[in-house]
Structures are given as structure tokens and as C-alpha cells.
Image (cartoon, rainbow, N blue to C red; front, side, top):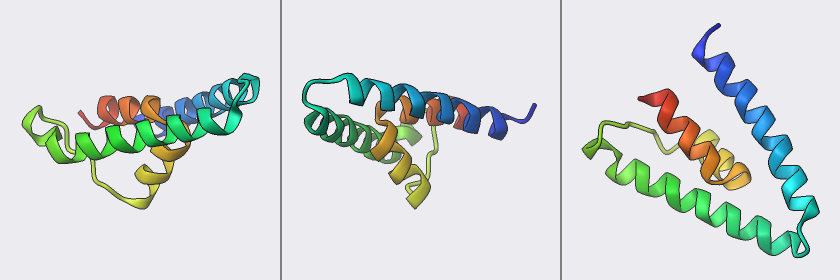
Length: 83
């Protein structure tokens, strides 16, 4: 199986898990905002300083939206796949 297909399958599973987590929270909106900001911050830091540790992740619309919706788990999976 190609790594790209595995990546999309894992993103789908994590999306469902994040949806369940956000729905079960008491403060859904704040939880989503905090997760989105944490994911975008992690993506920015990996894009800026990732070359120093051997990870090259481009900052494009797909990665930005993925980190905004899924948060830090998306950035971790990107780092694993792009390594």
C-alpha cells in the first residue's frame, strides 16, 4: 500500500476521532479553537525549523487546513510521512 493512501486513511480516522472529542467536550468551540491554533502553530514551527532536524514540510493550503481541523496529530503524521 502506498504511503499516501495510508496517510489519507489515518487522516480520516483521526478526523472522526477529533469530531467525537470535540462533540463530547463541554466547551466545544473553545476546544476546537485551541486545537486549531495549536496545530497551526506546530505546523509553522515545523516548516520554519524542520530543516534543522531533517523534516521538510511545505506550507500549503492542504497542510494549513489539515492542521487547522485536526490539530497537532496531523502535523505529527506529516512529519512521519515526510521523513
